[in-house]
Length: 520
Ligand SMILES: [Mn+2]
Image 1 (cartoon, rainbow, N blue to C red):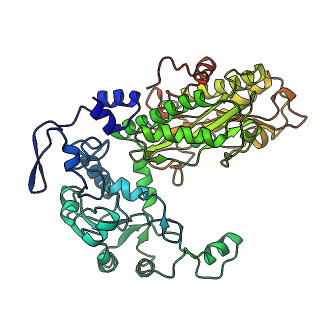
Image 2: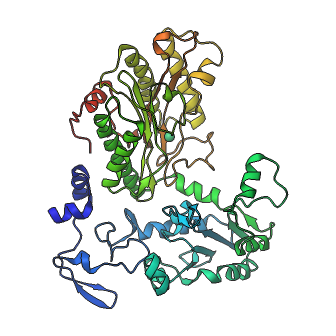
Image 3: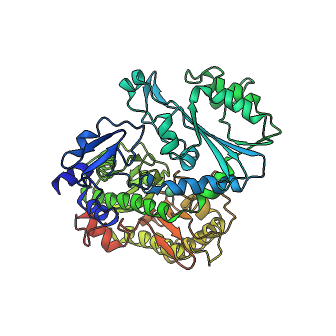
């Protein structure tokens, strides 16, 4: 087992979980055909697979991450096929869909950030390299479409510096494209193909305005050295006639809003990792350490459990810092008697997680902290119970309900609320957002639409009491938010982030390192 432990690099609870969910792959199964060579894998097979020949983990190179039938960890090849088919089936005849990979982003000069694929492109292809694009042409075949994947292909000189890239042959066999071509031919191919179709579904990036900038922000963007002059891509975009061009994102968003069982399982695992890391971070917290040390501990635990990155810059707000909703400077020292509001989540195998907990630095809530915490917790738990398809509520209605619940809780705590106190001061943010591949899958989400089974949303009511005389003094400078990820089902709701302690007794136990039962 030691070999497996080292290999996975997982915390013990995750190893157990993986042992349950992912039967050991066939490392010891003898000989495996690898390219044209048969390679012995009896004992030290992993070393034979280095360096990888592929541009991303695939079963052949990373059998401990990707199962035989999966394209990306947790998501089968057929599911990507189904996504594309559903998209293309929803389009009128004579349509194509075009999606492109994310560009590499730079911190400064040629110093790049860790690459993250564009969400829609990844959802449709599972392809994780930059410099890539896909064209899907609607056809009348049973598959429903024809797929051309554009990518870099093999280039030994570049691969020597940057690592392996997926070959055109593997683009066909692994990613199931009908055709694979060099990304360099994408502009000309797109130009010629678009003239054949009457509906071109494509999302154009926000290019800097051609006219002179009017706002400070657009001026800064305009002057930014990172904005290159007109690229070939922009010239292609110009060539797309506006009469045939349609936005692709709303259609993909509709598909993405309902999570498949495989997606639910990956999101569950992501929330487990974050929730358990949060529980342990409560025990790590003590007076006189920096908020940044708390953030670092959380990130370390998530990485150890296999997470690829954090899903967002975490909020670690001690004491009155919690009143700043997006407090991310995380550079002050925590004090005895304060609470920490921590909003953090990892990204795992392509899916985000998002959890907020508020806990006492000393390990025990004071009576006033306990009262305000209970008010938020009561509201939060009632709201989670309403996240079902049968309740027929929209996010807007749920938010409205959260205001009513918090108002009644505050009345019991002797708050004398005037018009606007709750919505503008004490609870100035919205209750919820959909979550999935993106942390906020809400750009194309209608808050007026009723919740449906398979959606995953956050439920995150909060109360933030400034030190002003109209509010009871004992609650001044307290900020509390409790956020869970909730999977909507027909008759019930499932809290995916249950491994993060939430009940007062559980939080206090976690704060002194007693995680019993151990979160999984
Ligand atoms: Mn959130």
